[in-house]
Length: 159
Image (cartoon, rainbow, N blue to C red):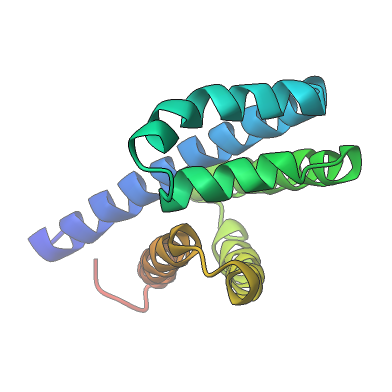
């Protein structure tokens, strides 16, 4: 394999592993939302943001996180739990397929990631969260690497 393709292959593997780790964090976060009471979530957000808000009462991340926790109801908590767990499980399945080089995983991953990106951009239109833009940018890089690796597997690019 030429050196250039070796770099692409390693970048592909690292990015897919990072996606898998992110998926596991989403699953764990979703499970915590299912198990924790709304009051408990608010308590921990208060604990985690207290120092930052004492230092800077207008801290962007801390104030938005606290506002989200204060506005959380049982229904929104259930939605976040379901969203995080389903999103995480879907990504774990796709990551496993990509790492095992299953041919169906490549186009399926591209389709699913496109849908996730569309949803992230929709959410961004309401939240203007820099985190969503970062996640979308990372997803675009991963998609390009998946597409490239898929082309290599199909013999469209010389490996």
